[in-house]
Image (cartoon, rainbow, N blue to C red):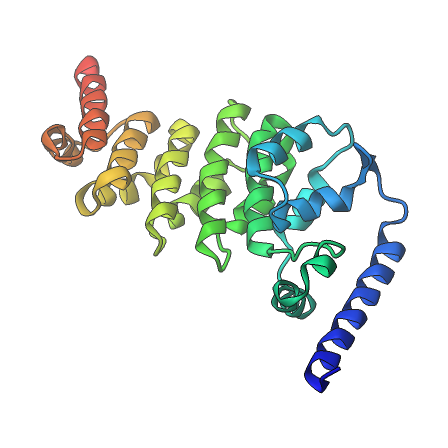
Length: 263
């Protein structure tokens, strides 16, 4: 065996033994669902073995409280071990790869954990503080998922919550995120907070003037849901009725109809 191959095989063997020992020590007493331990389902959040809709359905059916494991997935990062394992795994023979665990992508895991939480509705309320932290995640995909799911959860909760003020403040900051999809999702989610999102109005007003497409449409829609619209922004909303973007036109028309209904 060539020295290079020997080193590769030895490295894999060490990693595999470490993985097995960790699994035996840490997972021996885990709850089981459909014959699989909880950790297997948690790993499925980031190993690509199941699609998001399947994950949402299965986690919703689990009888035990899944919030702690989903919260852990939200805080999980790619360790050096996982980075090395992910780099080596694709280069292994197919027969060996099929016997080993799939590499875990922590970003995928955090995104899917957020989507699952969003699908749990009111049962996910205790996880809202962790979702708010995800708005500051280093990866834009995670921030996009968090910005969208917060609005879904708020709609499920309906009445005001103790997290409203923090959520509105964080989503208002997200309106100025460097990623466009984060802005779009945040603008949409803020509408779910109704009058509780009054402090987001100045930033939403700015978006009406400086953004376009879905970002502008969602900003207009949210202004209509929050409550009173500042008089100085009404002309911009009226002008948006003739915007080239259909979503913007539709949002503007609905808000103008609401404004005229109160005049």
